[in-house]
Image (cartoon, rainbow, N blue to C red; front, top):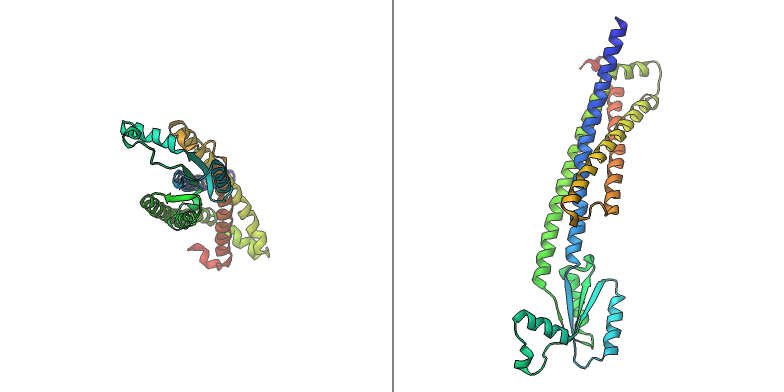
Length: 292
């Protein structure tokens, strides 16, 4: 009879651990996917920003040496991602191809100017910073005019900020819900041990001594759940990279490291805090309150 009871209790305990691992793994999986979307959306936004250029049209009397000096100084600036120089002859050929006729034969001379396209780093592609760069280069003795798409920059900045804000709100809300779900699962697993906790406390065991095995076991279950969640995310990344290779998920080691590290750290912190709070609650209960 005692053997049957022990077997039943063991199965019940294993079932409880299994449900805790599954629930934590599902929550961490969703948190990992959301984190991946959040990180990748930032990288995609930065990639779009770095395709925006500010163009410097040079004066006709600027010599090749002066031009090279200007290019070298711009290349050294901390806002420069890359620069492209386009001579007025090359610009004329491109423009003639676009309109379908040689406009130089009609005008008799080339009205275009030599130009330097400056592609900025993502942090500098904002209306305020590009306005500052426009004012700065307009004062340069070699520059005749400065041009960039102000409307595009304004729309791009507003849309990225709006998307980033809602992603942040959604991530925060989901992280909060995840903590509640994991905390509930752990509390339910500890609930079945509340009489053991009180018994140990009554025979003189300290709160730290009673709490330690519960915390260690929860962290172990959390790490198992994190590994399961990472395996699931690995499959998602594999198929996304297969059908959307432009995202370069597999090659983006920094983003992957953030996701893996974030899931492992989240599993450790949430299980530790949840177990601490759950055991503390039962440690503070009176004996007659354990039945409610």
